[in-house]
Length: 223
Length: 112
Image (tube, rainbow over all chains, first blue to last red):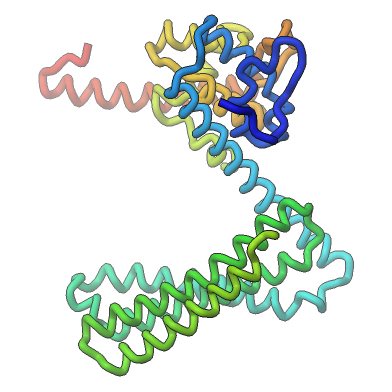
């Protein structure tokens, strides 16, 4: 196996199984890398690492990357938002903040209502019920608005470049995908109810949003 | 609450964080010594990835702490918060085991 360009700890005795560390985030490698490799060597007792060990380590490393990204994204954004508000830059984000909070509350209320309401009906009439579809569409729109407004606020925060890049990619992908899925739901509903109106509406929405999503993804693709 | 969320709670007897805390309750150990001890008392084999994933979470939560490195191996020891968390988890398990034993007893079965 060849070594990738990602740096792994080096030093006397360390790089023997160093390629296993490439799955882990840099900060983790710097903190735990050497002792982790010592454990791997003790475990292998001179043998070569088998595919099961490699797979398990890769999975653990990717989980660690996921954990680091969640910490970096979630925890970095909140203090940055507080700093922005304290620094008197409130007017810049006030309107977006109101929309984001309002849409988040509406999404939560919509989900709660759908959950409670679906518990009172059987599944067959539920799938063709206009109330259910209206609730679903309303909640989806609220979710899309909430995500786009939070992403817009995140763009104005002083965040580390890596955190900013992750949030930008998420913001670019999630909202268009939700809008496309909404079109699919409307088409599905039109088939269930044999409604030409909803079929046309759904197809137009699906085509328009797919085109928009493709454009957004092309624009947001990291260079 | 945040600590429990990050650890996923110490719920099952084969949870790696729980096994590590039990092992460290007997004294500081480095990674390989931990893995061997856990294998001996719980018959559970923890791979390096799983073991260090759990060590990372436990250290983040302040339930264990690193000691000075011995060559390339770093020993860890349980903290006061770790001991308290372990005691709570074991008390929960004891309560469940007692309830289960009592109910099986009423059916005339002996779990031993």
